[in-house]
Length: 286
Length: 300
Image (cartoon, rainbow over all chains, first blue to last red):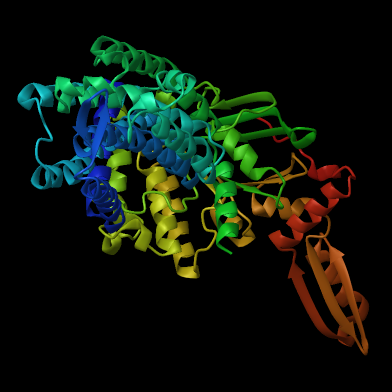
């Protein structure tokens, strides 16, 4: 029996179990409903709005829906694992896996699967009502959905490692806000999610284009919007080649860096660290 | 099973372990005693491979835990102090999941992991096997920790303060479990505790760790014998009462009778407890005086 493959199998089972438990948990159901409801409310209030430039116009709903999906994807798979890792380092979940053979491989596999699956309910609670409430959301039919699929997959590969790295490096759960949440919110704000990126200064546009959120957004819009909406993209193009290139670069960098960071983090795990975190958490309560 | 030589550990300028030599032999249950901050947890974490020592030689199951691989990990069990991990899982789910990692290391002579139901029954969690872990009481959770620690049928088991927070019944059940593991499975066990009665009950051998060194090693009885005055004799002679510590109880009492005869009105012999011994040894070590005859060779 190959122990590594066996551990990955266990990790997949772990990810699935976590996913099922999450679907049953009122807390997580509430989170999905909150995110879905919030997005729909935003779209509903802007249902008659139009974004115009150079005589072209596109409905706010049509522009925002794919962009928001992109932002939620990035947010979900960066903050999700970052928070989970920081948390599970402190509560001993990770240590339990360190204490069994090939446990870390299983643990990481479980995390990857769990956070990837976690996107599905999010997509569902946003897409299904959107299609019922609004017209002309998907302009490209089947080929559009195919694009959605590859952008999702590549976007996941590009951003999930970032979450893992943040979760491994932050000193504690309380710091995930500063080191994870804050940068993501800032990046979302400058990545053309709620309004076309041309509205911002040139150097801000340049910064946004270094990071994956902007490119996932472009990819998603290229799947949902007709070519008449190209007026709102930089260079008047979907730049599909560049999208693939940038996201792949992030994915490769992630695959190279993340295992090292995870190994370093795992090496530092010990029982007294968990005990210390517990004491600190208890102090927070009092 | 375990052998260390000159094990040192310092955090910054503070030295926690200053040359620990200890050994655990196959099938032995060894208890590491010591005051808070003596370095018990640090020692055990080094042996588990969770912490790198600053210096010294460590061999656990023939390997250096710091570099040992997964095959080594499969032979070692660690009972962790859990807290709030896997809150939504049930004990059955968690044991099935974590036990799975040991399957590739199963041999006909040592099937791994334990059957989950059997193990759950062994630690007395049958009624709670399908409850969410967050709903378990502190004692039940500790029993789950023990189950997770032994799920892989380890040859060597580490327990760091396993019974902290146990009620007397849970403590007794746990002691039975330790005896069963060591008798039936031949598991070697190294545990730390504050509870001297527990150490006396469980351990084949007790090690006393204080100020970063092992200052004594032996069975509870041997340790007691090492400290001068293993017993205290109290007697009353007319209106006067006396106390005298002695190694030779029988001889001393005989002389008492020869000397005082019928004038003795009260006589009490109190054997030194492990607690007396322990406190005496720790005190001696902390006062900085060499522990004299107590410091016997404890290596190999």
